[in-house]
Length: 415
Image (cartoon, rainbow, N blue to C red; front, side, top):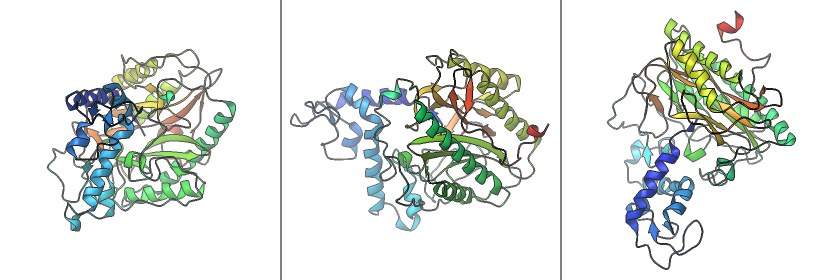
C-alpha cells in the first residue's frame, strides 16, 4: 500500500481546530500524556462522544495522537450505522464495513463527480483469518497502535541480519501470493475473486494479509482498475476485455511485512495502455538501479520523473513509497516525482518500497466517497509497480523479485 504524502499537512490543519475547543473539564487528563487537559477534540464534541479520551493538554499532544485517535470517530460512525440509523435494507455487513474517516460506500451512491467510467460495486463481507496465524495489532479492531507513535516514523531503521532474513522470507511469500493472483486474471473474473485468491494463498503460507482491517480497509489486497491510481477495494465488478488492473499485495509473516504490486493486462489491451504499463515498469527498474549506500532518497523521484516525462506520461505526487519492516509504513518517505524534498541518504541495512504511480494524463488525483479509492482527476488510466528493497553494502537486493515460477505476463521481458 502506498503511504500518503500529505498526512502531516492534514494533521496540522486538524490540530489547529482544537484551539477553539478550550475549556475541557479541568478534572480530565490528557489522553496521551496524562497531564491536566485544556483542549477537546472538536470532532468528538460534534459526535457527542464521552470527554474521557477526547481531552488533550496541548495541540502538540493532540497532533501526536491523531493517527490513532481518529479511529475513535470511525468506530462511533460504525456503531451509529450498525444501530440502524441508515436504511438496513441497503447496508449489509459488507457495506457497513467499508468505512474510513466516517465515510461510507453504500449501494445507494452519493452524488459524486465521477472522473471516469468505473463505479463502485457491492463488497463482500470481511474474510476471516484462522487464530493460529500471527496477526498485526490492527487485525481485531482496525486500529494500528505501535506504528503511529513509533520513533521509526522519523528515524530510518538499519535492520539486523536476523530481521533481514525474515524479510527475505516474507518477501518471497508475498511474491508467490501476487503470482497466484496474476494467474487468475482474465475477462469475467471479479476483483473480489482476486482478493479471495490472495487471502487464501497468504493464509496457506502461514501469513496474514497486511491490508486486512488496516485503518478499517475491508479486504486482503488492493485492486486498482483503469483510472484507479491506488487503494482500489476488491468488489463484485467483473474485469472486462481491455482493462488494466493493479494488484497490491502485502504479507505479514514472522513479524515483518513484504509489499509489492504489479499492473496486468486483461485480455486485449490498447496500445496506449500497453505503453503506460511498460513505462511504469521501466520507471521502477530505473529507480532500483540507482539504489546503493550514499545515494540521496530524493534522487529516486528525479530518475522516475525524467523517464516518465520523456515518455509523455505524468507522476502522481499524493502518494509515495515508504520504509517497511516490523512496521507496515515508516520512515523514509520515498516521493516518486522530481524536485521533491525527501531528506537523507541510503545506508546498508535499510529497507523500503519504491512504487511509482504513473498516469496517462494529468498527475492530479481525486478520492472516491469511500475514503480509499484514489482515481485520476481526468479519468485517464493509471499504472503502478512496486518492490520491497534492501540496501546492501554494494547496491540493492530486491526482496520481492520475480521468481523462475512467476507467470510470463509482460511481453517486454521476452524481448
